[in-house]
Image 1 (cartoon, rainbow, N blue to C red):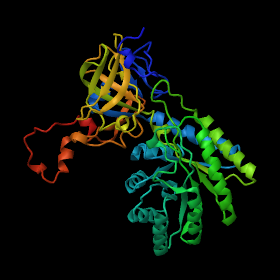
Image 2: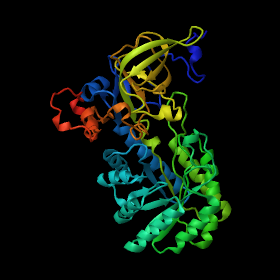
Image 3: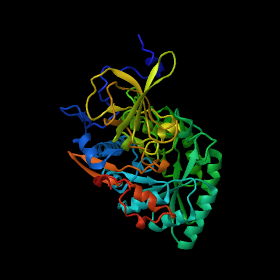
Image 4: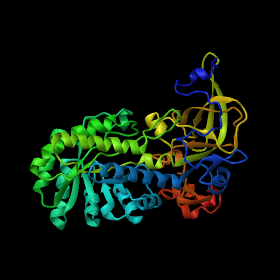
Length: 480
């Protein structure tokens, strides 16, 4: 029989047989527990990580990122080769971008997709060849476009008539020829959160299919623009291939019509491939995704009597998401009586929505486990919350954690590699945590954490140089 507390749990959340287990697919492949029951990531114990870098800290498993990047490249190479074409796989940097991660994915044969001037500069600083960069964004400034053309980015995905004219003016002035894709809205609404679905008509990205023909015609009139093909992205955190198949079919109709006016060498079907955040999530295997998506494009081309174009894809979350685990220290616990005697435990940690905004933004679900030891008590329905002055400051909305969880314990939240650092903030003047890579029993900082002094240095009303009393909080040396 369910306890009163269990009645507060969502239907999908079941009481675990082992409250200390690490669900397959949710954690990096290297995640295990040592002889003392502590979590180990990439061969490094969480206690060592916390001592060296402090908490919160995002731990990124290098082998997990590399393995997933390689798997996408291999799967799409094999799938397209089977149908007589080729594939390019771009890592979607918006999920999480640093110079180190950019180098990892380039090493594994991927390209890099950016969507702001800042992301472009990170990729360039990492040594990514400009020709291997794709540049997205619905409001690229003239300065951003000029920089992209100047360095010779491989492709710019145009998103509006105004952007086409901006690029035309730049290339006319510089004499450059810029390769471009036209982003289209296929009208396919992926089965995901409304804010993550980007292919229905009422949204800011791309051209409606009828308008795209006019945009392509204009591009073909301009000597400084080289039309490479169509781009479509239907959303994020998508399981299965049905949405991709339907979207590809609609884009192919436009692709076929455009062939009357000239070549359409490539088609970019975006990304949005989902990962497991909880044990009930069942993402489609990468090789199955690749085989079915490419086969659907090939079948559509065969039915129309046209050649299959070269294809491009843009996975981000599916490469870096599962590689990330955020470590927190428990600060307080509080049992709150809800109704009819039901009690929910609130577990407060030393981070929150400043390092993981996804729960507040999207209602995202995450998992959590006691990391510094194994719990010996029964599972207790818990809500992991942050330290910010917001009732919506929730990190993990529903999870069963050991009832003997106490202040000072380390808590680990998996699948935080994507969009957590990217969306992080300094809300309530909380410094952003470091990002630490682990591999083969060693760890290193790849993004330095912030200090209170960093935050104060941006306040023009504070003379940081005069603060010499040593009263400011510090950050563990390794995290700087």
